[in-house]
Image (cartoon, rainbow, N blue to C red; front, side, top):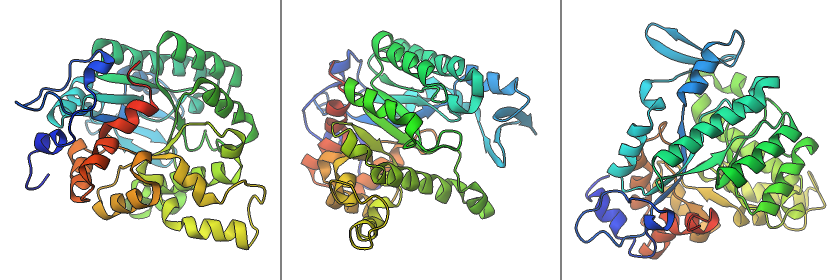
Length: 360
């Protein structure tokens, strides 16, 4: 962050809640800062070592192998590095402390359970147990987002119940595509109904991009493929009438909604004027986009300013996308966006505390 100390910026959010709401020991504070607002990171990931070792033993993708001293994750033509720091919970906690983050909604990095076929339920339990262990080890500093084996609806429903009732998780991580199937398809509709029933937020997140073949040239998959995933998946969910069918559903899209908010006018025109897509929606598509939540993972201050104007400050959430992005990158972007103090308080933590019921 330029021209301002990180803690001074976060302290300027003013008193409203503290990490004590979760029984936490808050991030170390400087004098005069102890009453600042809670800062909540709603998108932060970890490669759990158990999961990595499981993939290392596999003979088909997704699998992990070492080459030239580097650990690599292979999913078809998509090969990514897993450096040691991406597997280190203590380094994540240190990054939180350094940047004044009180609570992190923790999830596993992909691949999710849906990529493991019949082993999916066991993989889901492994991942969720690892998340729960991190929550228990650092009580109050982390809350869990559960992963579900959605290729097996009965097993997924049982695992959801376990995560909510036994593990006290605060939300569901839903991948943008489920081993190539889209979340709006009929076999996954039950999940939206259960999430609405439980009052549990669903957090969308990119998976292996369906546009990998089109974006892998020049190594553009992380830039374009992931953003197109958010865009396509969210557009399909809107067009499918999910938000009409489940009007009380709590839904979060990362990365400022991919590209969808920026083409929302075209979405409206395609549906309302050209009569394409679903003609039975109760509202225009852009209205649904304004009714969900989006996290502010963008290193472009102008994009955050647009999001505040488009969605309003009550619908935006701070996130870091750590370890892929360092927390100070997004905090700097928020600072440089010039968002006023009251709205900053909401974005940095107030909205997340309410949405994810972090006081409970």
